[in-house]
Image (cartoon, rainbow, N blue to C red; front, side, top):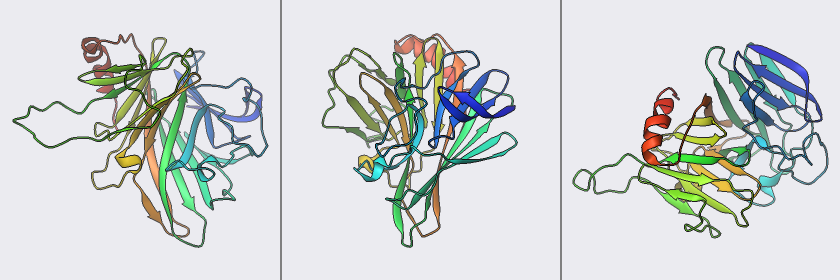
Length: 304
């Protein structure tokens, strides 16, 4: 594993870069915490970059920037949209880098993202941490959002099939937002998978929330597959009517979002949420038989 500090990327002068033989990850310390690039070396960035925002700093307005960020749910204005436009600290030890934000002045919450790059396989552990710096208890839900590059499609598993004779009880919640349209052609509703395409020509927004017990979600773009693995706790209380997975898209982006359970955090305490990321080369068609043959063997090579 190679670690580089003071790495220049996209106009930001102070970035950190982690790389192994095949993949690389870049996080800027000029703002954040934000992971702004994840991809194969000398390959495409699977994360979205906004050309008019990359390299910028400062200001009181929240900016999307692109990349991967940490929020606390549920989504509320102004709490959720605290601007992360200022420099952050970082600590590096071996193949792990911790990104450390100053405490949010409006919420009393401090955000950290701890990144550990595997030295042998194309995977990264991304540990998200919310720390309560208030003098009182706060209810928090960690929310990890990856803003994906244009033109790909998200892939989410359906729950394993069981016949009526085997199970007569529901197995998951599926949550819709008021602006969602199930007839939108970006959706591909399948028996084994739900897929959502990012279309730069789209005029509307779409969002879906799920309770996802298999614990994975993918994004496929130009022959490369990004996979997230994450946990499901049957005893946890999940926000947004019971979601640990959410997918959002509009004309600019598609977000692959995961959520931890809601926790009451005492003063000085914290809550953590872990994702494990993988990158694969792949040729994935949209039909379910092809996904069974070409996607699922790759999912079988991942773990949490």
